[in-house]
Length: 161
Image 1 (tube, rainbow, N blue to C red):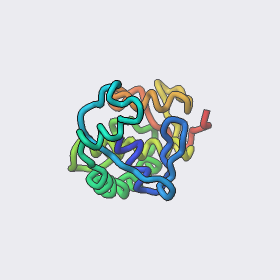
Image 2: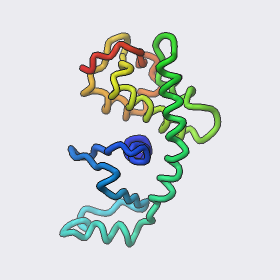
Image 3: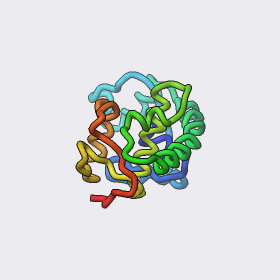
Image 4: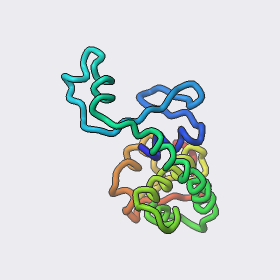
C-alpha cells in the first residue's frame, strides 16, 4: 500500500486504482486498519460504516511515514540510474539505505523501480530478456521477485513494450 498508493499520493502523483485515476488535488485519501469486513456486512452501502466502526483511521500515520520515504526514493532513483551495469532488485533494496525497517526499504525500492520503469529510464529483465510493461505489476508484487538474481534493472534499455 505504501509504495503503490501512499507514496505517489504524498508526491502529488495521481493514484491508479481499479482503472480509475485519483489525483491528490481532487480526491481525499482515507486509510483504515482493522479486521476484514465480511461480504454480507458490505452489501447495500453498509461497508463504509462497518469499516469506520470496526477499524482505526491510520491515514495521518501512513502519510507521515511516507513523507520520510519520498526523498529516499528520489535518491535511490539517482543511484540506480548511475549504476554501472545491471542491478538486481535485492541490490536496489540494499541501495535504499541503511537503517529503518526492511519493509520501509522495500517500499522505497518498489517506488523507485516503478517510477523508473514508467519513465522509461530502466528496463526490467528476466534472465537477460526484457519483461513487457504488462508483466511488471504481476512480477514486482511477488515477494520472490525481489530476491531472484535473474531479475534485474538495466539502465537505458527500455523500449516500453
